[in-house]
Amino acid sequence: MKISKKVLGRVEGEVELRLRWKKGKVEDAFVIAPNYRGFEEILRGKPYLDALIITPRVCGICGHAHLIACVEAIESAYRKKGAEVKLSQKATLIRELTLSCELIQNHLRWFYLYLIPDLIKLEPSLGEEYVPLRGKRWHEALKASNFATKVIALFGGQWPHTSYAFPGGITCDPTSFEVMQAKEFLRSLKTSLEDFLTGMKLEEYVELKGRDFLTKVSGDIGKFVEISFSHGLDRVGSSYHRFLSKHGVLYHRLCKFDPLKVKESNGKGYSWSKTARYNGYPFETGPLARRMTTADKTFRYLSRKFGDSVMVRVLARLDELVRLTLRSLQILEEIDLSQPSWEKPPVDIDTFSGKGIGVVEASRGTLIHKVEIEKGRIKSYDIITPTVWNLGPRDDNFLGVVEKALIGLDSELKAEIVLRSFDVCSVCTSH
Image 1: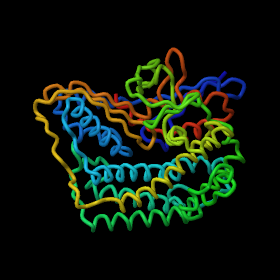
Image 2: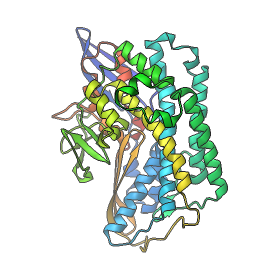
Image 3: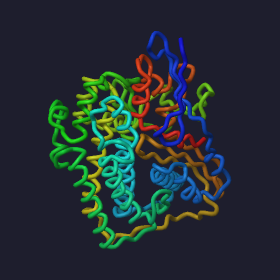
Image 4: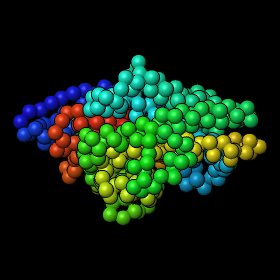
């Protein structure tokens, strides 16, 4: 028996992967988040609107998702106390647009900058254009991802760490000029994706169904499918086959998601990440979970055939990238600039007391913010990130989701690929 330890590069934050080997296979696995952030303690006692500034700093990649979860938690607290919170369709759409663009930039950078360097090790013939820093495709992907962040900055004023959402709406009041600029950025993004990611019009890609998805997809998605079959990525990386998103919980059957059934624990104490359970069970969250809990027929088919493997998990993220790009262009056509950006909720912020929950889908999965306010100040704040769902440690009954997915692998490289297929972010161990 041997034990291997490695601090991984090309992840958000730091993660140590500790593997115990027996007869050439992984017998046990530990995913360790080594850093403590303390954001929940930082928030305690502060005026509750300060959370709109502080929580986006939890993460430099998905900080916008933290902002939206935070503002929704505060609005939830208002509503539970009987205060009417009015959100115009304009404000709702712009929040959706900016959050979608954050997911788009993350998915693109994750695939080309984080995952593909490992695929090159598996398949050196992939070519020089994919090599980090100097490869043509590496630069094209980075440039394309920047189109999405520019859209966020147009409406949010900056990216990352945007704080433009406020209870009752948004603080920006865009003109037709900003909308026109956003359209140009997203059209450029769409053209780039068609050139190298899908190898076809995005509208044609989304029409691929079931078996046709694997046989007719082209571009870099098609190359990834070929590599997956050549190196067994269609057969490794499966975990519990339980999926969770704000859209539902899938285990044997699809049920409505109830955030009150989510509980956290400190696990076995070897990681700074807590571990999240739903009704006591571990669940995978992220793009694959979103596809499965929205009854997507293509990914239900892929899941039946290949399970929750690395190939299916990665394809779900790339598929979401395409669909969010098309949806973002649609949103820009739906925005009515004559509507108000913000309507003040009827509460006294200095004396308000209440509890609220905000749930959003971030790049890596379901993000939950829980806030308790007492006389205008934060009494307690709990952030449950996708990290604690997927990378959280074992408890008395179950291995962590990623730990389970690593058991039985026969190479350290594949273990790293399986771990990265969940889009690692140890920065969000905010507790």
